[in-house]
Length: 116
Length: 115
Image 1 (cartoon, rainbow over the protein chains, first blue to last red):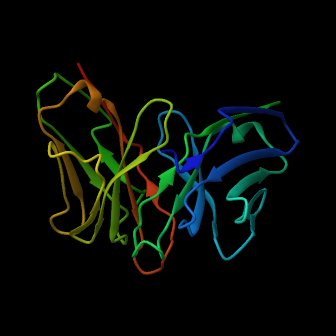
Image 2 (cartoon, each protein chain N blue to C red; image 1 turned 135 degrees about the vertical axis):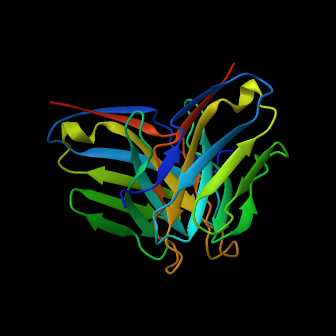
């Protein structure tokens, strides 16, 4: 049972345009959401996060939007750069509602390619 | 401190052998996690420590798997009687324990191949 779903295995955009990566979740207990970026042969690198009490968090070129009613979040990258090409993982945790559990549940990832 | 360190980076072993991986977290982090990632999948949670206490274990962690963090610093993950299905990338991560919902920082992983 996939609790965190990234339905697009890949996405290709032109440099300078917006990249939108989507993520859906099924567990209403999730209260914290994160995006990680992963290059080949490296571990995931933290990018940005959002708490369930917010609907938007922005950090430079990266913005995460959360729609709790739809159980959907998205990562916007503006403007996209070739160095952003990587696999992006959406992750969620249920810290408060599951007694302090720190475990992250990850999606399968979306491979972003930014073309020059 | 350059981040989370894992050793070895790669391990090839024969089926039935035991293997042990080591993780050194970021020094001020008291929380340490182990994940496993197979091809085409996201990382899957295995277990989590706060200091030396193992607080949670996934059902993925069969009785052939054991993890320790004896002094609340580095951790080891041992797999006994390895099977081909154990082939995966094993990722370690750490986070600070002072603030709720802080991000976890990952190491580069240990890639295990069981032949």
